[in-house]
Image (cartoon, rainbow, N blue to C red; front, top):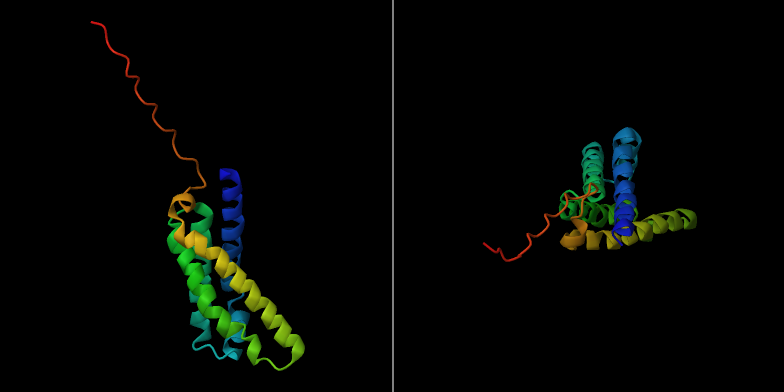
Length: 144
């Protein structure tokens, strides 16, 4: 079960890490898109959201402060999705469907991020194995 959890954490965190890096690589076009959605200061918004995604994704992948990383992802998805993917405001059916798909995807990812934000014991497992536990000392009576 540990291996399955680790693989899931790497895939889930990797998705956000990749998208965070993409925010920096595609900063200009993403800022233009954010500006078209009336996001105030779109350049800064793209940088901040890219940082939240990259830090959150890396945190979950590596198991380093995963509650904080998952909280960054929850904050990103919860705040950005209604602004950037407001399908209910679209009049053209194709665009409405496209935004609805992206909004629904983000809500599913938001739901998946909540357990990572709350499950500290299982989420805290690191990618690198922990050092072996010390064997208990035998309690054999001494015969002097």
